[in-house]
Image 1: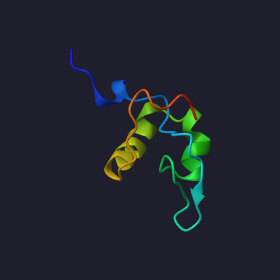
Image 2: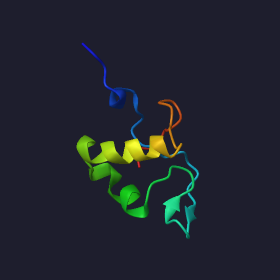
Image 3: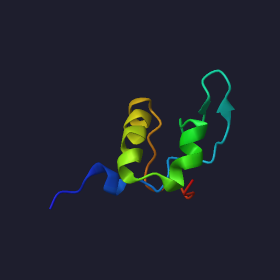
Image 4: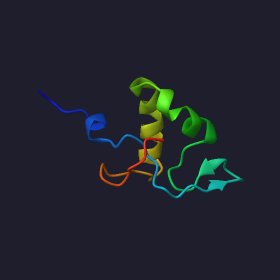
Length: 71
C-alpha cells in the first residue's frame, strides 16, 4: 500500500502568523486567500488539494507537526 502526500499533511496550513497582505490579499503566514481560510473547515480533500499544491509551489509548505490549528 502506498501513502499519498496528503496523508502526511497537517489539518491546516495555518502557521499562526495571521496577517493579510493587502496588496496580494493573501495571508503572509500560510499563503491562503481569505476565502480559502474561511471555507477550509468545510472544504473536501479534493477541494483542498489544489490549494495545497499552490502553497507547496509558492514555498508555504508546512510540516505535519507545525500546525496545531484546524482553520
